[in-house]
Image (cartoon, rainbow, N blue to C red):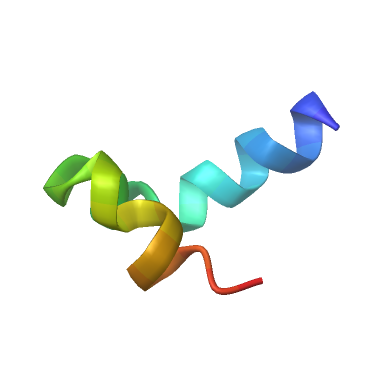
Length: 30
């Protein structure tokens, strides 16, 4: 699962850089 999350972070890197709090709500829509 760590690998999956790492790949996901690669695509959602912009979202995380912007705001980790909104990451799960605005970017992590899966």
